[in-house]
Image (tube, rainbow, N blue to C red; front, side, top):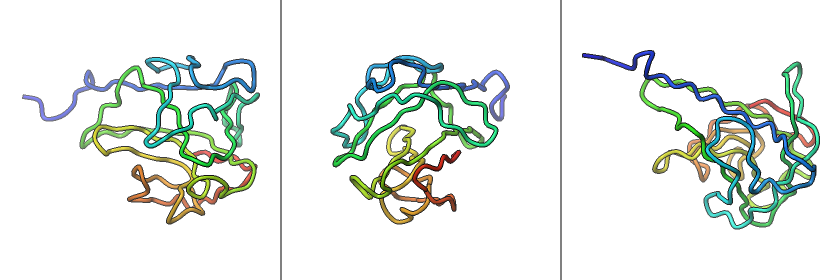
Length: 171
């Protein structure tokens, strides 16, 4: 009888997207690179109606002494919800004892708060049912800090770090 996961049950989820595509300015939609993904970037996002706003920009974001390579994704503010998606090659196993780490670099540019829902931006991890996780600048409640929240804004957990135009943060 087993009372919990064994070492054999643990599947590392090593996913990396260095945006190593060319040329700069090209649309991210349909690009297929990085590691740990099941396919290319596709039109996605809950209630999203814009899917061609994510463009490749030359050079990676930098943060302190963190080693980074590749390029980055850039988008201007939009007047409606925009989004792209990417499926993982392996699902992230979840359970009562699961600990998973996720990090990303974000840097707002332009005028903060411009665009739909106070200029929210970030990344969603789509779970099963309604267990989606958003990390980034929210569109409501604690809109002046980066947060973790459920899709749609419920259950916000503020980071204590304010988005500042031109300043890169590691979430």
